[in-house]
Length: 331
Ligand code: COA
Image (cartoon, rainbow, N blue to C red; front, side, top):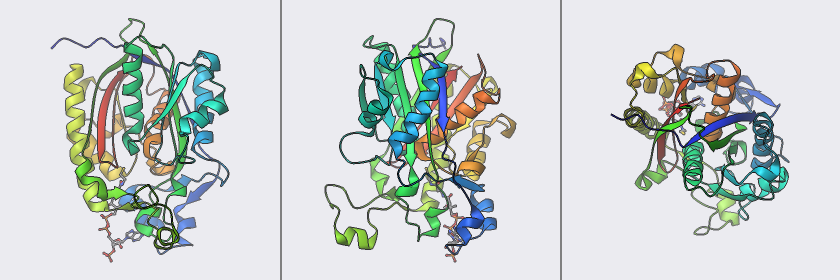
């Protein structure tokens, strides 16, 4: 099979995590759970929680500034801002427009993408297409999530799983060296929407006292079903992305999976034939930050020297929608 030629490359990455660390023991003081239960079922030890006044635009802007500085990109040079978030600061305008204002990227077009935990990959893929069309050269792809704002803190089955954070990448045209996005496979299945969703508070069931009283504006999840679908879909997506890149598992230097649960990560890696020493894991420190997990993990992997120049990265994610996808990238 002919090896694909990259169109766009990741010029830099950045991340931002709020300072406030909430441990499993902290949660056990306010709900009927334990460090032991959370650790053994999910691998999570602690997560970051943003202060009330800090929303997704701010979380993402802080990550974006780091990425822009590393790529030596000035605000006026950014052509496109795509922000993935399941927790927009407000319903109108997009969080991307709020972030654009914070960053001063006055020459860019900006919009949100809503694909839950798979959102960063959707954003990268759309930015790649935009660059391929020749309409712009510098794309800022950001994922910013304040999951703490949409959790039901009375529901131990969801509240212990998530955290807040922001991750960013600057995408530029590939320079012909072979570095860049080699393949991607993105998919969704709206028939399974109700496995992981926020039932109320939107245009069909607008915010009302009854929505608030019943918590219909908060996240609901069928954990077991999500678990099964996540493992199956991520395994399939890895297969397809690898095949499109002309790679086998042996070509992968590092798997950077969505960080929802260590057991899902281990099952995905096993299926893909990638040993755990080639898998990046930080779910223990941050929990599930929805779409922000992948760019934050990639940024940490680069900093730790595990995703340096010419490293072959396979990244994979799964989330509400349902949505899922995988991507191969030569760094
Ligand atoms: N602390 C203590 N006990 C808890 C608990 C908590 N935080 N959450 C649930 N339990 C209890 C349940 O009430 C249940 O008790 P019961 O047997 O008395 O009814 C028991 O633990 C087992 O619950 P169950 O939901 O069957 O556990 P599980 O092994 O499926 O693990 C998840 C639950 C959520 C960890 C697991 O299903 C999962 O990780 N799913 C995927 C979630 C996810 O990643 N979502 C995001 C995708 S992007």
